[in-house]
Length: 340
Ligand code: ZN
Image (cartoon, rainbow, N blue to C red; front, top):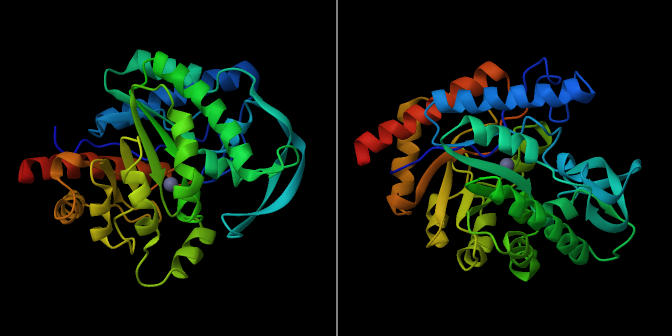
C-alpha cells in the first residue's frame, strides 16, 4: 500500500491518567490503579488511531512519563534521588537530570505490559518507540563510565535487550528517537550509527530512527528560529543513515525549513515524512497533507514514503491531537487516491 500512515510516537494522555498539556506530567493515580489506567489509555490510543485510518499504530506512549525518563525508570545503576543540573542538546535547555553511578543493567521489562496489551487488541501493524543511545547519553549525567560514548553503548545494550523482547511480543516496528542526531551531527557518523546498530542487533522486525527538531515547546521554537532560513542538519547525517542497517528514517517536513531535496540522500530507506506539525494547534487539512506528500514524491520514490507526524503529540490538547490524527489518515488516503 502506498503512503501508509503512522505517528512519531506519543499522544496526549487523558486527564484521568496524568496532568494534561505537559511534557513531564504527574500521574493522577498510583500502584495497581495506575498500572490499569495506563493500559486503558493504551487501548484508547490504539482505537483512536485505528478510527483515524492510521495503518501502523503505536501505544501512544501512555505508560511513560517522558520519552527518555520513562526508560531510565527501568535501569539500575542510576541515582534518581540526587539530580544535577545539566545543559542538554548543546545547552538548549537546562534540566535537572539523574546521575549514572554504577554499571547499567535492566531491572526488568520496560514496555511488556503495554506492548502485549496493544498487540492483543489490534490487528494493525504495531510500533513501539524507545529513546536512542545518543539522546539518552545527552539527557543524563555520568559519574561512572567517564566517557559519554562508552555510556551510550552501555545504554544501547539495554535497549537491545528490550527491543529483542518487544519483537518476541509481536511488535512489527521498533523506533529509536534520536533528536540528539540533529545537534551533534559530527558524532553521528563517528559513533551514533554504531550505537544504533548495537541497539538493533539481532532484530528481524522493521527498525526506524526518528530525528526531529523537538516538540512544539518554547525552547525548541526559539532554537528553530535561530537556525536560519534553511535547516541543513539532515544533510550532514543522512549519508551515514543511508549506509546504515536501519530500515526507516522519520523526519520533519511540514512547516519546517528543511529543504526537501535533502531527503533524496536517504536512498534505500523508507522515509517517514512529517505531514502534521506538532508545534501549532492549527489542524492540517487532508488537502495540505496530500500536498506535502506530492512535494516529497519529487525527491523520494513514492513506494518509500510513509505519512507521519513531525514529532510526538504528548503536550498537545487532546481534541487537537485527535483532529490531527484524522487529518493524517484522511490526507494519506487522499494522496493514495490521487497518486496511486
Ligand atoms: Zn521528535
